[in-house]
Structures are given as C-alpha cells and as structure tokens.
Amino acid sequence: MNNLMKQAQKMQRQMEENQKALEEKEFTATAGGGAVEVTISGKREVTKVKLQEEVVDPDDIEMLEDLIVAATNEALRKVEEESTAVMSKLTGGSHINKLIEQLSHLPGIGAKSAQRLAFHIMNMPKDQVEQLTSSITGARENVQYCKCCCTLTDREICPICSNDKRDHSVIMVVENTRDLAAYEKTGKFDGVYHVLHGAISPMLGIGPDDIKLKELMQRLAKDEVKEVIIATNSSLEGETTAMYISKLIKPTGIKVSRIASGVPVGGDLEYIDEVTLLRALEGRVEL
Image (cartoon, rainbow, N blue to C red; front, side, top):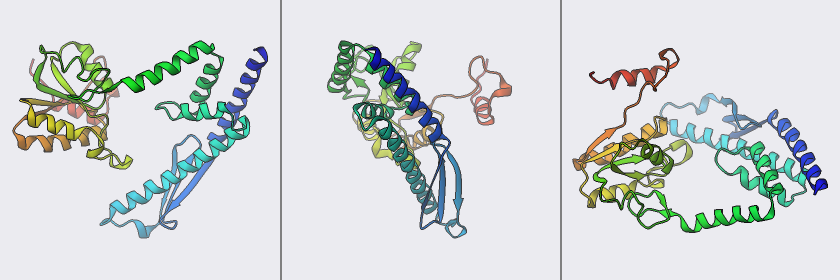
C-alpha cells in the first residue's frame, strides 16, 4: 500500500509539472482559409484574435461570428489533444487517465482538480468507492424532471407543485434547480416555479428549443396563471432569455415581471459597475 501511495504521489507531481508546462504553450487555429485566426493558451484562454479585412463585412456579421467560433473550437480541440497526449504518455493510457479525463468533463473541474479527485478516489477504501458509484448510478436512474415545473426530483410531481398551499397562479421562471433552491431558502415566495435548465446563448449554440420553454408555454395554456416572474441571471444569456420569454408571453395577456437587480446588501457604491448602478437607480422604491 505504501508503495502504491508513493507511486501515486510521484505521478501526481509529474502531472502537475506537465500541466504547468502545457499552460505556458499557445495553440493557434484558423477558419475561412486563414481569414480568421484564434490563439488560445494552455489555460484555455483566448489570447489573440486576428481578422483579415475581407471578412469584416458589416452586412454579414453572422458569417464572421461563425468563423470566430469555428476557429476557437478548433484551437480548443488542439489544447485537448495535447493534454490527452501528455496524460497518456505519463500514465500509459491507464485507468487513471480515463478517470481523470471523465472527471475533467464535470462543470467547474479543470485538469488539476480532476487529477486531485482521481488520486483521492484511488486512495479511498474500496467500500467507499462502491458507495460513491452506487449513489451516482442510483441518482441518475431515479431522479427525473417534474412533469409540471421540470425541476429535478425523485417523484413524478415535485413537492412544491403538489403542494395545494402554494399559489399556482404565480410562476417564477429560473435557469436551474440551484436557483430554485436559493429562492426557497428565503421562505418568502409562496408561488411555484418553472426550471428552464439553461439560457439562450447563440455563441454556445443554445437556442429556445434547447431549454424548457415549450413546456412553459404548454403550462401557461392549460393553467390559470396571473403572473410570470422571470428570474434568470443578470448575464447576457439571462437577459436574452428574459426578453425572449417576455415577447412570447405578453400576447397572452398574462402579466410578465422581471426580478429587480442592483446594489447588493453590504456593497460599496464605489466598487459597483455602471450597469448595476443604473439598474439600481431605475428600480428605486419609495420609502
């Protein structure tokens, strides 16, 4: 066991060294026959974008956007190939490498974090590893979308939607189940929710059909709803989604509102950006 631990620690140090060397490299890819050139660092950050004059056509911005996305994706693919090659060389394409690769696909988990998690799992007792895999498999097989609001639940209808004490005439639209949980913690909202599981993002190729918008409109058509509160994030994607939903719902005569945004509690004005300050001013209330 001690020898295994020493080998794992040695391999982890080597991986960290190789990862650091990878982060210092740059990867360049082109699109449109070289008309668009994008350079990305080993940290997966865009460091340079070079455009030929002939592709900058004000009347065809969509083509330019498509070329930039294509070049960026190709550069990212090169980074992934290099990372995989380095890892395979070190581990010999072993099960460790496969585990690290799968863990790195999780949101918020980079290469270094995936390595640490992989070696932590290797050092766990076998029964704990079996419990972990069993929990993951069990959750994946038994957790489903609520047939009403689309949140994640282990029931056909989630506890919130099945609660007769909630005000079903008011629906709050959120991007994901985590946002729903955040509002539930306040204990002040007695309506129900609708979870989109994403936001519209043309740059990422996510359109209205890729989120739970159709289910929302079907719900509004059959239920007696008085108000829809749009509580998507204050990001570009969140605002785009909010505007799109508003345009869909307003013709139905249902009231559509947007959650307020502005200065956070305890925040200093001097550190707040101009957009947030403007929204705080526009959303002011009488005392």
